[in-house]
Image 1 (cartoon, rainbow, N blue to C red):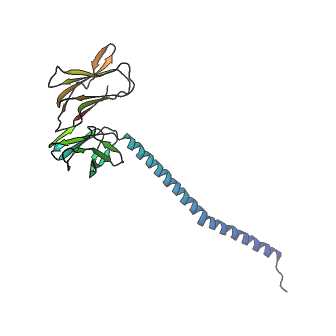
Image 2: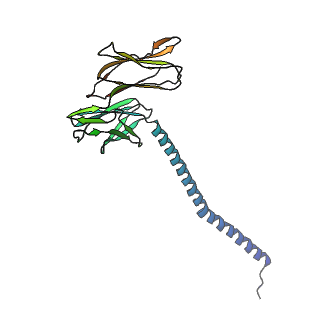
Image 3: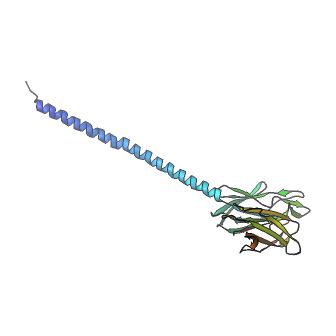
Amino acid sequence: MRTTCITCLRRRKGISTILGTLIFIGVLFTAVIPMFLVMKQADNIYVQNVHEMTIQDDERTRENIIVSAYPGGSDTIMVKVENKGNVPVTIVRVWMNDENVSRNDSLSSNSHKILGPFQVDVENGDTVITNVVTGRGNVFYSISGGLYYSDGQWFTVSLGICVVIYDPKGGQFRITLVNGTHPSWNKIIYESKCQEWKDVIASYPVDDAGPYTVKIEQKKGNNWKDLPSTPIDVEIRWPNGPPFIMIWVSP
């Protein structure tokens, strides 16, 4: 009869335990750890996507486009686009009522472009509403409102001038508008009643196209002093240009 050595049995049990441990470690490395790495990669991709979306949302809110639509002819419209934001913008579509034209026009900060002419199918009594769409999905409408077509001519709701004073440090301001054709016509269109701590925006409608001078003053002590960049000469060239003039200044 064959006898088994007790020491041999113990040695075999020890070897089987080591083999079991090695097999467990092998399963761990081939199944659990790859799954952990995949999950970690998915988390990184998610965090990256959230970061990119946050940047895109921030850039979208920083877009600031001024759009002016005006006639290019009896059946065409021109569109002036000014980028007053601090991020570059791409115009991807121009809408005129329910019709649109695809574009790919890039504008750097503080630049402008004239788009068109765009053909429009209009009849007597029609109104054309114009807006542009940016690559980030923002929509900006023409500041001049709709263009009204009657008896072969284009009309707008009103002509006007708008002044924006960027005022990061606060101040008191006075804005005077002078008709270049009739200099005796001048009017104070805005005057601060006290110290202001936000941007000043003043719009004023005018009856006639033509040259105008905008004088912008800041109060220093008891006196009004011209801002360094003023007076500013502008001209409303309607119907051969935008009916609304925008002016931006900073003390």
